[in-house]
Structure formats: C-alpha cells, structure tokens
Image 1 (cartoon, helix red, strand yellow):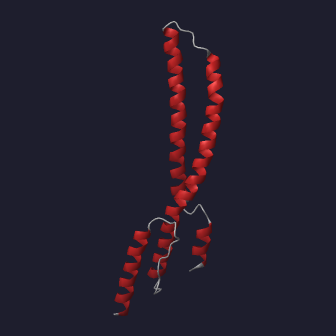
Image 2: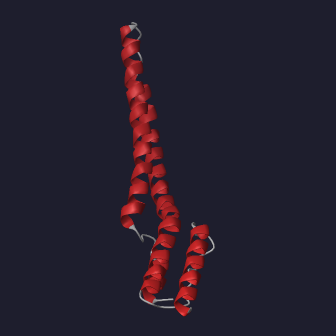
Length: 140
C-alpha cells in the first residue's frame, strides 16, 4: 500500500466537494423544516387574528428556543454523521482511483482492498477482476 493510500484512510474528509455537498443537503433539509415550522406558525397567528381570536405570543416564545436548540443539536449530529457516512463512500472511491493509477503506471499484482465498513465492495471486486484481466493480458 502506498503512503498516500494509508494517509487517506485516516483522514475523514477525502473528497471534500462530495462530502460537504452531502452534509449541506442534509443541513438544508433541517433548515427548510425550521422555516416551514416558522411559516406555519406565522400563518396560524394570521388566521387566528383574522378570525378575531387573540393568540398569546408568549406561547411562541416558549416553543421557539427549545426548537432552535433542538435544530442546532441535530445539525451538529448531521454534520458528524455526514462526514463519517460520506467517508465510507468517498474513501473507497479515492482508494479505487489510487489503485487504478498504480495499474495504469504499469504496476502488476495490484488489488483493491477496502475496510470492512466501507461501501462499494462490489465495485472493488469488479475492479479487482478487471485488474486481473489486464495483468493476464500483459503476461500473455
């Protein structure tokens, strides 16, 4: 295993563009949920006022801080899980690309090896079969 391959296995952000995009999408969904809640709350107050009811604005002040704290905690958890889960995809892609580069440079006997919890095991197996085929063609 080459040195850069070992280092990439310890680093959690291997493909920042891909990984951060996944996290951003997850966080956007949480923010969208919060905005939807706030929008529906404003709509409720508008409808209540139009109907002549007087909703107590203190209720919103009681609900909003715990909701914001909850969303903040969920965002932190989503970021952590996002980095870990996306690493299980980006890490194998990085590893497979490194091994393909080794084969393209003429090295023989290269095999893609992934960690137990990594995704894309089937792809790694197919790449290994392709590498074996290339090695056989070079030898023959």
